[in-house]
Length: 261
Length: 261
Image 1: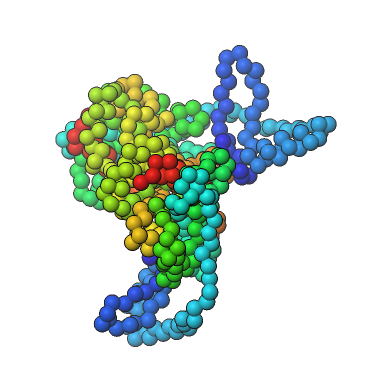
Image 2: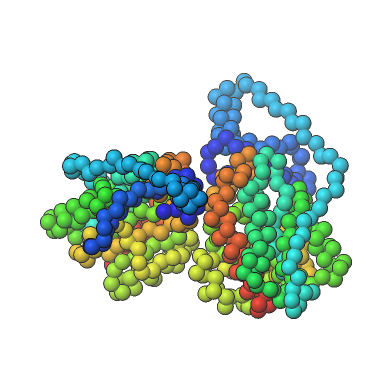
């Protein structure tokens, strides 16, 4: 959905509760919905007809994309930073979630450019197929468990590449309490909203193994101007806002790496 | 100036210190400046020539635009909310400062729409000629003094119609201390940055009569993408962000009106 009146349908998944009749669904723009309601109301004898040709095809193989900087002291403790590489196919998916992918790569680049050698392994993950069932995130967590990998923390950016505002934390009260003393260190970057809640869809499955999750919180006002629409293209991302987000994530990950949880 | 590389010159005023030679100045885009520097460096025998035809014409009459809701209990105590109605002439001046003008009018509309009858007089002022010498702001303060008007507070929006972040306050420590207990009331709107500093150019001249000044602080990252350029047009303003700013200003003015300073 969408807080403004425009002509861009916002697509998305539909779930049905048990016992609920499975009616067909389609995305329609806010202007389109208003026009349709008005027309049907004004012309009670009008018949509205629409035909859908969508279908679910068999699964196809796809991959998560992973890159990392090996930790210098505790290489077996992993901090994940990620976004998802798939998008709805109306557009490029620049805000959802190209921005999060680029920011995750940028975190590694910033560490390298600054000559910071992390103690722990920092791993950028572009998760596949978030939009249609979280397949990449589920598979990643399953593999991590199978391989006995220890994921200390995971940071996700999947709310757009807008001006940074803070991080939501999913963990125990004790784990959150370890982060709170860092607030004054993050405040100068405009990261004022730091507290419980957040996380991220792709990193969510890691929580069952005790990984602490951090959801990057950018300014949220324009996200649903673009989210899942034909206008979610490169041009709607502000380079400066995107870079500020990546720098904010790098700052948090630096603290996580230095002080642990 | 401008934090990004693009083709839009950002115009502005030029001031000279005493004893400094008065060299001609012109605005040039960041891309244009890079190209010019590179070309001159690579071709030392190249002669660069530019001609300016600008001139200062005699003053012409112009006006501030003022509307108000008369106070029900203390009509002689005035709270001003304003922006400036002039802009650099390359574009519409939508962010600088059409946004501030519309938000100031919107504050009055919100009071009326909500049926809030303010105790004090709430006055929306669109100041004329901020860009070339602050003439409207100076004249407004002079007239207020001459007419013995008591201006308790003045709120200005002149940093663009972006997502609200807070207010800067110009007043005595005692006056600021009266505002601080309102922080929890403003926080739910995302108004987290409330403290000393700010104010606004147009309301600045009121300070000498003891008026407390409030500068509306929106998110600042995109302002200089547009400020004083040919792209500062209606399309670059987000309606939602603009409205959130107006609502934030109305919330502050409601508190100022209810509790005084």
